[in-house]
Amino acid sequence: MVYGGGVRYPLNVIYFNAILYNPEEIASPDDCILSLFGPPILKTKLFRFSHTDYYKKEMGEDLWKYFVGYNLIESPDRLALYKRLTVEIEMLYSRLGKRLLNIDVGYVAHEKIVLASTKNFTHRIYIDEGIYGDVQLMRKKGFYECLDWTYNDYKYDFVSKFFEKMRSLVL
Picture 1 (tube, rainbow, N blue to C red):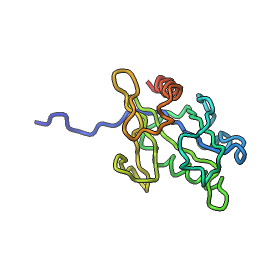
Picture 2: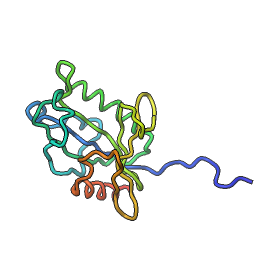
Picture 3: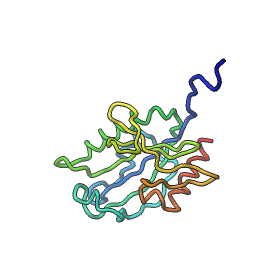
Picture 4: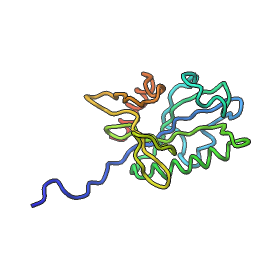
């Protein structure tokens, strides 16, 4: 007798990007990725990326960020492909080996927010072809909760509202 066995396929998710850029170098980041993701259906406000200097040396000092969602409701197994393609786009928009555009692709699932990364770390799970999955937020009792490694800009109230709206589109 088998209890609870068998393969269970995941529900579809909705894809988003976290876009970091220097407006002196890139005028319209959405135009750079339009052919891959299509037109945005939801965006957060633009905000100054100032809580860390991690990208300053590579991308400059005046960095701005926003989250943008698309009408891409698909299987979560496409995350690695989308990350590889966004890395290629980042390379197209680089100068002297330095990125002018940083695209963090992720998805909103019913129970969590997942980002793709090219870097391994203790809390990241290997997906495919050099790409790792990184749970940034988990949904508990009707709200998104941060984890020890959640990026600071994922903790903003307006970002949480963005993810709630994205989640409602995939339900």
